[in-house]
Length: 160
Image (cartoon, rainbow, N blue to C red; front, side, top):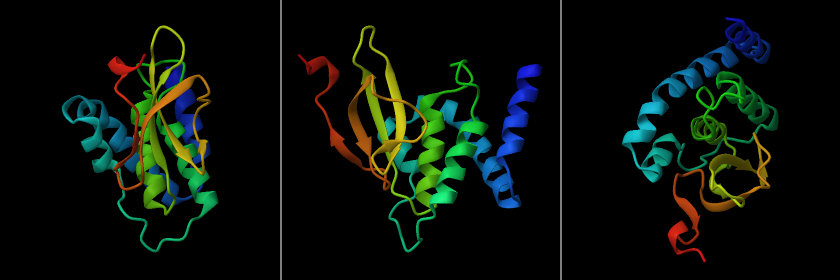
C-alpha cells in the first residue's frame, strides 16, 4: 500500500494543470492496454499505431516535452520492479505524446553489449535518451516519428 501511495504522490507532484491531468489519464489508458498489444502486434505495427505521423505545423515547446517525459515516468511503475515498469511500454507512451507535441522523437531498440543479452527500448530526442542511461546498449533499430524504421542492423543471429 505504501508503494501505491508513493506512486500517487509522485504522479500528483507531476501534474500542474488540468491539461496535465488529462494527459496523464490518456497515458495511463495506454499503459493499461499496451501489455496486451505488445503480445499481439509485431513491433513495427505497434510503433506505427503509437506514432503521430508527420510533424504538421505544431511548433516545438521544450517545456511541454519535459513535462511529457516526466508524466510518462510518473504514470509508469517503479523502475526497480520490472513487472510494473516496462521500458517498451514507457517508451511507446513517451514516443506517442512527444510526437503529438511537435517534437521529433525516435524510438530506439537495442541490446546489451554484455552477457547475458538483454533488450531495452528508449526514446531519443535531439540525440539524447530521455528516460535512461543507455551506454551499455547497442542500437539495433530505431523508428522515426512517423513509425517507420529509420535504420536496421543485421539480425542478431547473423552478428559475428
